[in-house]
Image (cartoon, rainbow, N blue to C red):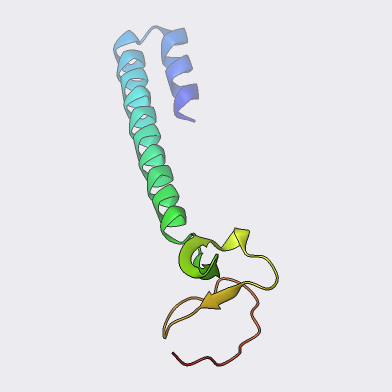
Length: 95
């Protein structure tokens, strides 16, 4: 709608109004681009922080790996309050 107002202002020769509207449109576009980029970066940081990992027994020692790399038969160490990274069959083992 504002773009239509700018076009009409140009057609009828109100150049002051036309330039003011164009400047405000460009300013608004820049702010929207900046906010979108900032939100995208925040979302990427959240996704990175929520990427599930698992502490798994491999080659006789526990190491942390991405949950997507778990295979059937892996022994996964879980702790109280930890997000379980996959479907697991629980077996009790006390050390």
